[in-house]
Structures are given as structure tokens and as C-alpha cells.
Image (cartoon, rainbow, N blue to C red; front, side):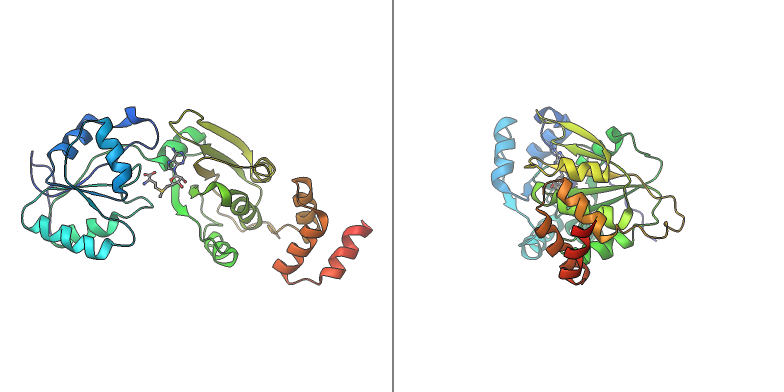
Length: 283
Ligand code: SAM
């Protein structure tokens, strides 16, 4: 067993520095000081961090550390840390290590017995969860679901019995599809969309998953956190999946053309398209 104490005043080491997720007033005094005093600042997007530096009059050496160079850059940063330098890590926005690079560098530092100091600060997931009004007693942060339908469905299957509130991140252009996935696997649960947190057009949209699908039929913009009410923990009802015709009707009600919806549902479920077409028009 090893114990590392990570706060001894001005100790060298790896500092994890959160930055605002929209509102620049959420930058902490300590974050500004660490970014000024560190020997090196490693940033996910140096251009983005330069804007922050200009705003807070920070002048310091910036190096890039992102998903695509994290191996090479991480090794270099570790060498700097081992030499006794202080490295501050920032991501594009929010808390480094939460759905952005960061955790790899933290692991490297811990393995090399280098102190890691995490500054508390802005984070989209927790801000959204607390404002959602859904249970905070227990929650599961998932981040981004897989993009491919099959992978997403498999991922959601693992969450079906989870009793805690579920927290997801999603890009605006994939939101509707993601909500459709939630409906199919988790059912029509209460959900809160937290949009543009801390920014000018911050809003919370509350309702059920199917209501959110209807809401997202129009052009959706902004950054989103999706909070879904946890399950009961019991076996789900006989069938959470909507019947094919129900799904078609729902999609049509939210703007999809009937024939396009029939074609899509038939393909997704491996059902005969002509048969589905006949059933739909017979009702
Ligand atoms: N590390 C960040 C954090 O601590 O929140 C998250 C980084 S992740 C790459 C970016 C995603 O976070 C966005 O796609 C969105 O889902 C969510 N996000 C970031 N800022 C947000 C904001 N102001 N409002 C709503 N969601 C936000």
C-alpha cells in the first residue's frame, strides 16, 4: 500500500485545472494562480486556452495534450514532471478527465509517484444533475453513448436495471437519435435536457423521453447533458420495445414521412417492408 499526500503548499506535480463550461466568471482564483505559476500548461486545444489566458492575463508556456497525441505528449510531460517541474492540465472546458483526455496522464503520474492535485470546479454533468431535480442519492455518469445503433443499444441494455439517475453527454445533431435509443431500451422515462449550461441561453427542458423526441424534431442547437430517471431495479415490463407500428406513428407525429419511417423501421428490425406498409395503411 502506498499513500500519497498531494497537498503540501507549493509542491511540484500534476495539477488538474478545471475551466469554465461557458461563463468565464466560473474560473476560480486558485485555477488562475496555478495556470500562472505552473512551469508548463498542457491544453487539449491550445487556441481555446489562449483565449482564456488573454481574458485572465495569464502568460505561460502552452503545450498540446489531446486524444491524438496523448502518448507522445504524455511521455514528454511525464519526463518534465520527473524532473520536478509543475504541469497544469486543462481541457477545452470543464473538468479534465471527464469525457476528455486527462485520466491517462493522471494514471501515468500516479504510477510514477508524482503528486496529483485536482482543483474542484466547473463540470457540465454535475451541474445538470443537480438542476434536473432527479435523484442525486445515486447516479451513474456514462458520458457519450456509442454512435452506432447496435453498439448504443448494447450499452443501454447494461443500464436498464440501474436505479440511479443516468447522466449522458450528447452532440446536438445526434440528440434525437440518442433519445430514440433511450426510448427503445429504457422506456418512456422522465428525462431532463440541460442545454447551454452557464451560458446566455441556458435552459432545462423537462418531460418524458417521447416528449423530448418530439421537441428535438426541429433543428437542435447547443451543448446538452441528458439526465434520465433511474429504473426501478425490477424486471422490466413484458416489452419495453415499442411495437413497430407504434414507433412509425410516433416518428410520423414528430415529422418523419410515413414511407420513410416504414422503410427505416423495417430495415432496423429486419421486418418485411411490404408487410409493414400494408399493416400501417390498414389501421
Ligand atoms: N470535461 C467536460 C466537463 O467537465 O463537463 C466535458 C467535456 S465533453 C468533451 C463535452 C460535452 O460536455 C459536450 O458535448 C456536452 O455534452 C457537455 N457540455 C459541456 N459544456 C456544456 C454546457 N455548457 N452545457 C451543456 N452541456 C455541456
